Length: 79
Image (tube, rainbow, N blue to C red):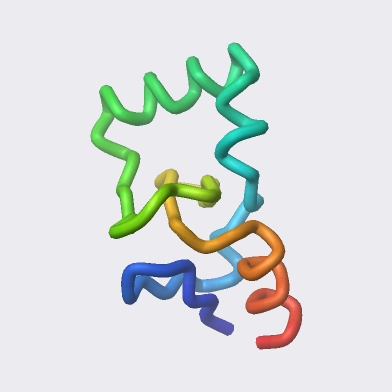
């Protein structure tokens, strides 16, 4: 199954590790370090035309999306 994560991007559901609220997640030092390292390795892709609301962690990349976590979870569970 594929999940639309915003910006016209679809991911296979089995590659998604988790959805995280960007505001809450970026308060944690470990998350900041993970994002910094991923950016240095060119493994962060922003899909935002608007204000970013979520971080989507996958097995290979991190996506920044303007879709809310609840919206992404609903898309994942309801197909």
